[in-house]
Amino acid sequence: MSWEEMYTEETTCPCGEGRIKQIVYDDDWNRYLNGPVVIECEKCSKRYIVETISTNSGLPSDGSVIVHFLTPKDYPEYSGSSEVKAYGNAANPNWDYTGWLIENFTEDELKNAEEQLLRTKSSANLIGVAAKIRDTHKRALKTVCVGAILASVEEALNLYPEYRGNKLQREELRKKEKIEMTAYRNEKRKYQIRLELRRNSSCQKQLYQKK
Picture 1 (cartoon, helix red, strand yellow):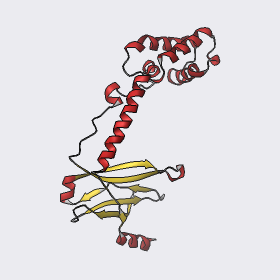
Picture 2: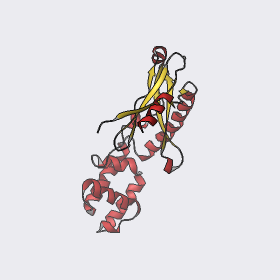
Picture 3: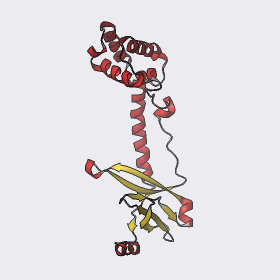
Picture 4: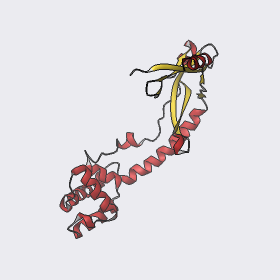
């Protein structure tokens, strides 16, 4: 089924000469879809971009809260610490199990897991970190054979010293990035304009008439 226009939410743009609008759609299953927020003003469209942020309200039952901002087009992008820029995307155990081990466990944790694997004949006896490694090994590599898990852990330990982006390195940079990103966003808020979109009264009347 197709989506049909239900109503429009809008507000006056900063210069006062135009409007900022968002069309809301629905379908036969009473699902709702928000269209893009559009700046219908030549002056303001040259000066601002619309940024949409989804935040948690604090109550699981309320879901997320969508907030729209106008941001000056010339405001600089974030250029601080970045885990992805420094070390790349996190390793996926399905494609890079060795990298995943290094990025999710410290060298000492892998050594402890290695000791357990060397002492047991059944992976069912593994506990703690070793058990977590076994479970992920089963999902990613489809085996819980002690010899196979041990080989994976030993490979990770051999590569650990030269690997860029191990668990501790990523955690340290992640904390630094979070602090710097929070400071960047707080400063950026000073230059942004929060949009308070209101339902168009004429559209609301048409909606009641349809019902």
